[in-house]
Image (cartoon, rainbow, N blue to C red; front, side, top):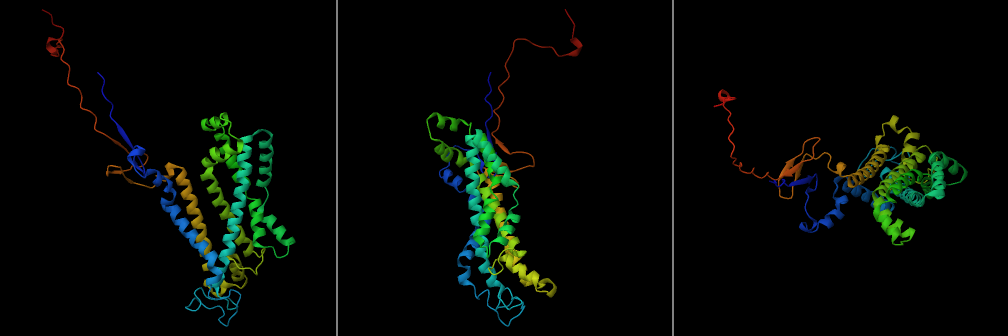
Length: 357
């Protein structure tokens, strides 16, 4: 007699019960916006959008000229000067608004340039292989050991009035190697997949296979590398301005900290001179980190479900998760079959065991 197995309906944390695509209208649309639905990624994107808006309209909406001097020397925040003034009476709030554009532009230029180079070199070397792979891997190893900050210091000492664009280009040219190594390793694992082999057997061109078969599977890694490069570029730009390597005549957050440190703002008790710029740096770094965490959770379902203790199934039931277990929802097992009558009678009386008549 065959007993029908009990059907088990697995509940994926954060997604509810597994159902057929046809039973969930609009499911593909929800999956398309799953990254934005992530709380960490959404928060980071909103903060980054605010910074981008300030970078565009900052110089226009600044209440004062950041270079204009006044008689309000080292004044605390007030209705007239929201973030206080410097030792020359300059409005610090206007300096932060104007300096946002420099920081965002440097981060974007360096991130885009490094991402393009990492894709071109990493994916190409991983897919083609052979001598091309050896040559590009050697080039990546060389750029891995080039110190970007030291190179920027040397270039800015040679070039008079080095612009932020030059600094961004140098950072981008020296920051692509690690991303290229990661993309090469992933491409090596994808080049022998069945769908890639099928496209190659159908006579697809190499550039088309790379563009339409391999790159879509590397989107999350490329986005994560871009965010990491932007963080490094922003911190490098601020560090160079803080130590006085880049031009101190153009405003960014590092320039504000440079003048605050040079004029002993901490010793004077002028906390408003350096705290707003430090908070702006910290909030921007937090936004980029949240986006990076959102990308990791979007790629890995295991990270996506971490921290959740209650989930709701498609039927509306709430299941409480336990640490170390994946909750499953099982239907009740079928009732056991009725006992089968037999002709043999088994005597279980111990007194008559072994007795014979």
